[in-house]
Length: 357
Image 1 (cartoon, helix red, strand yellow):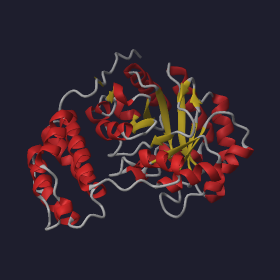
Image 2 (cartoon, helix red, strand yellow):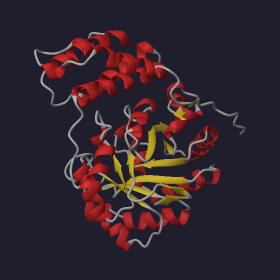
Image 3 (cartoon, helix red, strand yellow):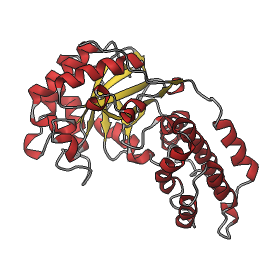
C-alpha cells in the first residue's frame, strides 16, 4: 500500500490519533514495536494560529517516528488554512484532517464530525488544506452524523476528487460516539461501491490481533488503524504481525518486559515534558500496562504517590505482592531507564514560521 509515494508494504497497521495518548513518547514506543504509521493527537487550528503553547508542543515529532502524520481540526476555513502553513513548516510526512471527533465542544463549531452536517464546507476546508500544504493530505472521518445521514460513499468520492491521498473511516456515526459495534460492512461497501482508488484505512473495534486480521479479511481495507487496543499495549502491532504470519498469538509480555517498556516510556515522557509533568502525565498509562496482573491496583496506588521518575522506578523494582512473578532485577529496569533518558532519537521541535496576512 502507498500514500502518495510512501510505501507501507502489505496490510500495514497504523496508530490512531488519540487525544492525551498519541504523544511523541507513546508513538515512539509503538513504532519500535511494529506500528507502520503514526498520527499525532489532533491539534486545534485555532490553538495553532493563536500561538497556544500546548497546541504547538503537540507538533513535536521524532525523526525515528517517520512516516508520521500531524492531524489538525477546526471549522473555520481561514484558521485551518493558516494552521496548515504552520504544520507544513514543521515537516511531517502527511497532514491529516480530523473530520471524525464526536466530542460536543469540537462538533459545535463544525470541527471534527460536526462537519458531516455540512459537506460543502467539508470540501472547502479540505481544498484549503491541500492548497496550503506541500505534503500529502489525508482525512479521517466517520460514516455520517447519524443513521439518517450516512453519505460516506459520496463523501469518499468527493474527498478523492478534491485531492485527498488516503481516507480513514471510523465505522460508526457521530451519534454512536464510541458505543455499540463498529459497522464494518460499511468499510466493505466503500471499497466495493464508492469507486475510489485512494487507500482506505479501517478504524473501529480493531482491538486485538485477531480483530485486526478480521478487519482486513472481512472488509478489504488497505490498512487498519488501531486506537484503544494500543493503550497500555504497544505490543499489539508486533503481535498482530506475528499472528498474520503464524496464526498464533504470542505469549503476553512478562512482568519484566512490561517494566522495561514502562521505564523507557516514562523516561521519554520526562525528557519531553520535564520530570514533574512527565511523571504526572504518565499516570494515565499504568492501568493499561499492568492490566490483568495480580496486585495491579495496589501497584497503581503506590505509583500515584510518587512525584519523581526515580520514585516510580523504585516502586516498580520493589513491588512483589508476595508473588515471585512480580519481581524484576534492579539492573534491568534501571539500565533501560538510563538508556531511554539519553537522546535516543532526533526530535524535530515545532517552530512556528512567520505567517504574513
